[in-house]
Image (cartoon, rainbow, N blue to C red):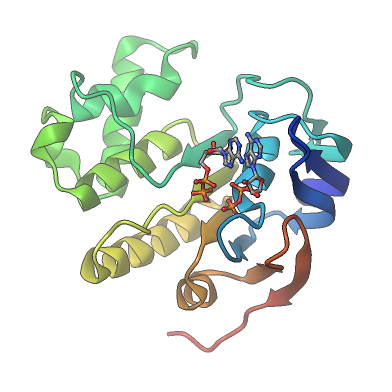
Length: 226
Ligand code: ADP
Ligand code: ADP
């Protein structure tokens, strides 16, 4: 069972930049795969194509059994977390987490309950009424993770989520993420510059080459962590 299938996928931007060059990759259900490589090697572009934000120039992309078609297609089965936890500053933590449920057929009460459940997963249930500016960077990142999880996605894309955090906060969020990944039975695609982070978190590491757009190899990780 493959959650993501890419075959012969390239992205050439209008200015001629080849960001992704003929990539093939199959990602199995339940995998935690990290993409590691230097800045500019095409990691974000791969994620943007998977999410439908950027259209591929060649090749085929299949997500959760269906073809990625147009940009901006609304998907509740894919969650996203980006480097900067962009929260709406004038909305409470709970309202921010509820955003992905906006167009779902659910009562307001159910939406609220789902958002509270997601906040509890990231250890922030006491901060539902806070405003983003009252939170630390690590807490904002937790809110952003809760928002990505609230619609119970089968696939979670994380683009350098912990890059801007201090080491202690990073470590605690790493363990939290592993716990959530195990309990939610989802597939995680994770971008990082940090090889140690990739090896610690992942079942698989995709190593990208410095020249843009190629996956050099994919390595299985099976270290005897407790
Ligand atoms: P990474 O995430 O690994 O840092 P990116 O996917 O952001 O790499 O970028 C890959 C390459 O594509 C880089 O050379 C970058 O400059 C180029 N690129 C990214 N987005 C665009 C764009 N919108 N237009 C032109 N070139 C782009
Ligand atoms: P990162 O390395 O963190 O993935 P970048 O700093 O490479 O991000 O890119 C930030 C944004 O600028 C992205 O949305 C990317 O698509 C865009 N971008 C990157 N390189 C170029 C470029 N050469 N021309 C136009 N847009 C670009």
